[in-house]
Image (cartoon, rainbow, N blue to C red; front, side, top):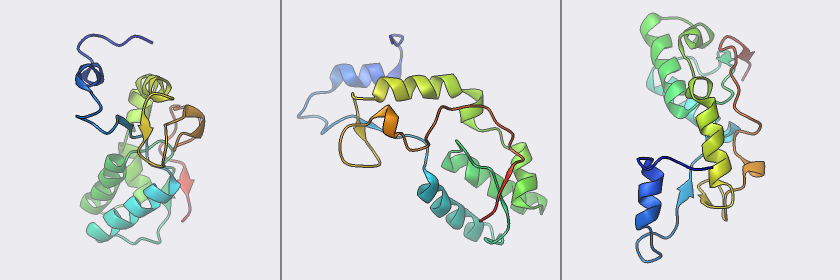
Length: 139
């Protein structure tokens, strides 16, 4: 896969030398444990009931979890209802995320675990696909 000349990572890698960087890290979408921690932070921050049902957060970023909690607080609605107004970046740019994952596999260090990132061990699991934001996951 070839990236355009103005691709930021390409510019970084051109300048990367062992003495400047310890490595290039790939940060994938958060996994289940990470998302649970993010939900706990933002439900507490926005004064929401942490025990209420949560929307299906498959392929969500931390920013999207924050947005959902913020909307639920502002609109005084449950998280599941607020999630109907959140469109994950994995839906709008899923092909780009998948391309970055494939590119990083074997080339970058994993931000989640020791060693080199491998697409087969990706954090979020599976391919990025569009989905319905209204599905519910009970805590």
